[in-house]
Structure formats: structure tokens, C-alpha cells
Amino acid sequence: MTGVRKGGFGDLADRVYTICAPGDLICDAPRNALSPANILGSVGTLTQAVGNPVHSLYHNFVVDPDGTTATQWAADWAIGLVNSAPSPPHS
Image (cartoon, rainbow, N blue to C red; front, side, top):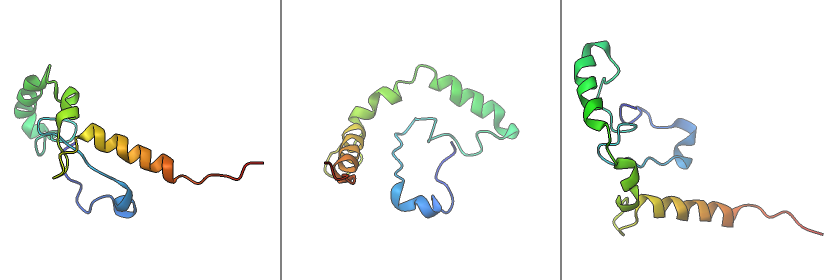
């Protein structure tokens, strides 16, 4: 919840993607947000986030130079997984 993971995702690095819109407190939380020393700042940030519609805006959040939005990227990725899945022989 507090930013990029040091060292990435290890063995899963080639299969993990991070998409994070600014202001999305799940992945754009302030550094040390969970530290007791930062409780006042964290409470202020959380208060500002109440009613923040960021999750409803991912359909407009562009994730690549081609203009692909986060939701379109996720849909295309899922379609690619389905289309490339092994197909068992049928009788």
C-alpha cells in the first residue's frame, strides 16, 4: 500500500503488472502512511480520500503511449490469456 516494492515481485515479475492512478490510496499511499509517527498526516490523507471517485475513473486512465486505458488493457490482457490457453483434444 505504500508504493513500489523493493526488488519487484521476484519470480513473478514477468507475470505481474502494476497500474496505479494518482490518488488511489491502495497503491499511491503516502510513504510511511502506516507508521504511528505519521498518524496525523495519514488521517488527513484518508479524510481527503473519502468520496474520492478514483476507482470509477480507471476507464479514462491511460497506461501506455498508444492511449490504452487501464480497463481496456486489462480486458485485452484477459482475452490474450483465454486465447492462448491450452486446448485439450476433444473426442
